[in-house]
Image (cartoon, rainbow, N blue to C red; front, side, top):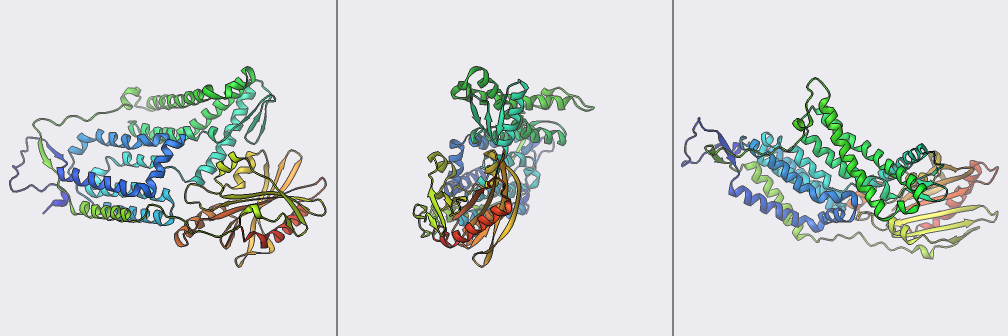
Length: 541
């Protein structure tokens, strides 16, 4: 019995003719079973997390290429039709293990309500099912097209936020350098480019992500098609990152030059959008030019048309012997796993809400804290929407000695639906403040849960102005100073408590002329001790 090899012939099968080439085809049973399984799998998981991925494709420019990726993967696999036709699949229990692992990841994503985990599990499970059917001999021919499917999944927001802030600052700096090449006087303050008569703000929409993610996908596809050494393929793919950063910075610089000579209309409307399309096409052109140069490099110099182009499968010879592949035990075992996951998710409710927490609204937060008297300030609606805030407090407090402290608390009722806390570590430089030092310190006499409160302590400066900042993340019975530890607890508490609510607490005080940071430390410690007993009603344990 050789059903796992896909080579067993039935009793009525004609004997193989050694003079004719043997070609293997998928049976109707395979196409029916795989299509039904894949369709049910998508439908079952759609309302549990795949819908959020699709929403991102149409709502956010940086992921707009995602809708094309399944079709690109299907085309690249079809390209290998003639190669796969000459391979007798062996099936693989390794594929069954991968399918089980993917199903486990899906379960974790669903339990924690973190949809990006479920989305990765979805692709891994499908890859495992294909591996279980093909075995390594077949899968090694199509692993790259299947890997491309991961590019359709939106990155976790915590990663995007950090990358976005960094790209804004880098693009602003390079853009200013380009503007100065034209002998234009310009001043950079964080991500704000001051031309004197007009200020260009490099906002999130100008950070380059809407070019970076699509161009990285394009770079990977180009590297896959490129018939060259592995190191050349890697150069093509990895170079998409610096190309995008530089070209986006170049775009910002040219906009600054055009604004200087032709007015602010150059930074708005159609021209702004057209410049974006021009940058993406220029990036694509640079990738092609790079592949041309790499093709000429080395002993075997070849023209680009020989190393880069779409190959189409050769038709099956008319006199070829055709055999239908049998479905092995590993495939059926993996299929059962997929079917169980699909049935389970059809039964489970599509919406899983976090535990409802009773808390006071910040609109009722006291404006008198011991000898500190405060005044609340509203945030612009556009900022509240951009930050996805559930509730917030922004207030300026002054004590009896006229010393000022600014209190900002950003509360998130849930971080499992795309919203996540923005760290001051990334935001402060964008406002033009230079972070001179960033350390952690224990605030004596203040506890969260049973542990002493540890905060981030940042000394910042803008021109001659100096400020001291304390900030930490309050999550349930913990005061957390590490951003990445916070992300772990978001996952862990979602898994074990069905809660992802948390808050950023940031306290800032300016230094008066002649005042030391030690004086500012004493002021903030005094304020934290006064604040701590009051905040638990608004950020509940």
